[in-house]
Image 1 (tube, rainbow, N blue to C red):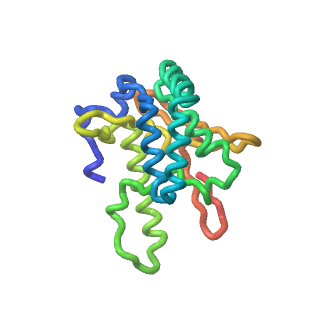
Image 2 (cartoon, rainbow, N blue to C red):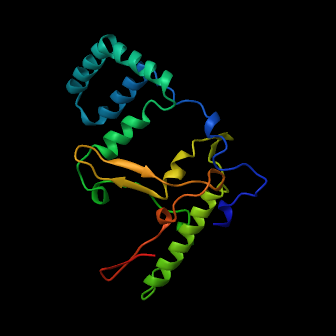
Length: 206
C-alpha cells in the first residue's frame, strides 16, 4: 500500500482526464484482420476460406458504410464505444450480475495477504476492509498515482466508479448511479459511503 501513495506536491489522480485524446476508431481492414486471426484456430481450411470470402465482401460492401458511421460517432463522443459496451456487456443482459459478471477485481492490497490460517476469518476481513478504505481515501484525495504507458497518462475514470456506485435493476435495461466525489469536487451524501456487514445471516448497517 505504501507504494500506492503520491506526494501531495505531485500530480493528482484525475488531473489529466480532460486533456486525454478521444478513443480512436481502428481502421476497418485492421479490425477484420484481427477477426480472421481470432477465428482461424477454430476452422478447417475450407471453413476459413469461406469466412475470408465473407469478410472480403463485407469489407468492400456494407462494411465501408458502417465504418463511416463509427467515424461520425467518434466526432461527437470522446469514447464512441463506452456507452455501447456498458449497455451490451452489463446493463442489457437479464442475468444475475453476481454470478455471470465481474465488475471488479483483486484490490491493491492482494500482496499483503498472509498464508492460510484457521480461525482468522474476522481478522482477515477486518484488514481487508481497512485496506479497502485506505484505497478509497487515496482516490478521494487524488493521491493514487496516474497509470501510464511509456510515461503517457492513461484514463483513470474507472477508479471513480469503484466506490459509491450502484446498479439499479430495470425491466428491459438496468442503470448505474454513482455518488463518488473527490475532495476537490465536494461532499456527497453520507449514506452513499456506508459499509454493510453480513454475519451469520444477519445484515448490519452503520
